[in-house]
Every structure is written in C-alpha cells, then in structure tokens.
Image (cartoon, rainbow, N blue to C red):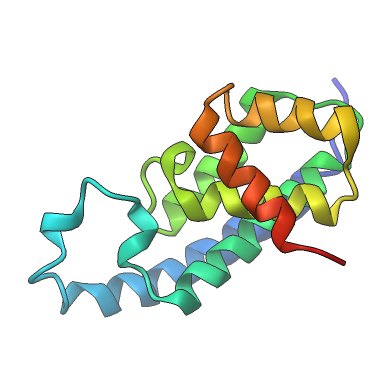
Length: 144
C-alpha cells in the first residue's frame, strides 16, 4: 500500500477545522431563532462572510494538496472534503455553493488547465451542470 503525501496536510486541515467548529457552534447557538426556515438553501448562506472565507481556504488547501498528487480518486477526495465540511457545519458539501467555488479556486491555484481541468471539474461535480458552473465561477475568481 502506498502512502499518499496529501494525507498529512489533510489531517492538519481537518484538525484545524475541528478546532474552529466549537467557537462557531457556540456563536450560532444563541442566534437560532430565525435560521431554521432557511434550511433548504445552501448551507453556507447562514454563515458570515468571514466564516465562509475561512471554510473556503480550508477546502482550497486540502483540494490543492490532493490535486497535486498523481492519482485522483473521487471517493478519497470526497471523503476529505466531507470531513472539512462537516467540521464547519455543512452537511451536503456537493450542493454547497461555497464548497464548489473553493474547489474551482483550488483548481486554478494548482495551475490545472485544459482537458485536465475539464476532467477534474466533471468528476468532482459528478457531471452536474450547476456544480460545474460553480467550480468554473471559482476558477475564474483567481485571475493571476
């Protein structure tokens, strides 16, 4: 069995994310009065922009580290993203706008272009048009 170099950064990111989740959960527990009616929308919509940016940075760090490895395993990639999302209170990362945008930003940061980019985008989005558009939006945000 081969060790993957992305596991160590992923463990650090997940550990950091779990440390941040306590402070976020204590913040939001006192403000639960009006947010239950918006549960059908994107789970990041109830987060502050600072929380969303921190979450996106965690996703970007993990995705960039993972995408720099030779082999792409959608299941392993999804598991890592899911752990980060769960630690940040996001239960359905695949339908979360902030997550898909962060993945697009990570693809750009990793200098993945052309057919490789299109292939990753399709695999990560599971061929879902809306998800692919959000990944594209994130990719285009990082104009260097």
